[in-house]
Length: 426
Image (cartoon, rainbow, N blue to C red):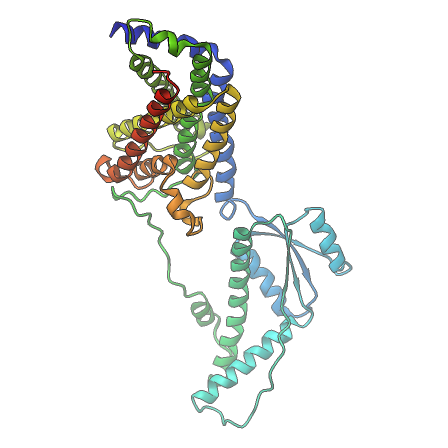
């Protein structure tokens, strides 16, 4: 025990001298968590709190286009910027190049006439089917003039889908209103009452959003709940920069060889490094979680809600930290220089994070990556944390995520020991 304690103190002193390594392990993950959570939180709230600037060029002079504009404004996701009648489509494009807005809609000149004609045709077809009018009038096919939706190339597909959905909802509302009006007046020979019209066109079934959780909680997960666990894992595995370099330095300096001449075991030195850096990963987790709980609300970001199973949270953090230290030791054993350890370690963590679901959600990955994902230890770390933070689960609910993580950890330990023996270091 004395040898282990002395070795741990030695490793702590070496660690505290590595200022760059400490910054990478502590400051960088904190900065990433703050920046990315802020950006993603703004993205989540884009539809609710912020509005998308929308240039609107109306060529139509009829009343229906004005109703469409009111419907677009009523949706609540657009900040309408109307162009005057003296401007042209070239002005729309030039203003979009200047990023005055990322989206623009051009309403064609005959939009009102087209909507009225479509309502008339649909009404006649409906009345023919119920034998209200004789089937003698043949409506010629009507060529529809589409609305033009311009978007800036920087706008991602997900935003375009949301904007397209909002536009289609407004179009459907306006066109359905006139179809109902026309159909009612054709049957009853007088205009539809406003109250009945609103009742028909506004009659929508309410939707209640309920997240699926194991503890029955209905708290909707926010950007903090998603990002804090992910970047905590990222921080843990980035100890490869410090730990991997430390092992390479000791190999090159002959420390492993000298250990064989001393009355101690190499396993003591290996256990010391794992315990030391396991404590570092616990410190990283405590620091990032604390920022999510206390600092984020003061910055206007959602607070981190810690899971109810604190023992489960501690055990998952220990399992993730142990896997991170095992990976770093494995990199340090096989790297020939510190540059190799730093370069390969950093790149491999980014790759494992990408295929593990930290950078891109697992459900959004192509099917070909689903099998590869199972080999990333960061994937199992993330699934275990999400089971606690997002699903409200207990330790027993995430055991199937911890077991593969422990298996990968043991394999990394065995690979590291094999590498040390192969290099005659133990």
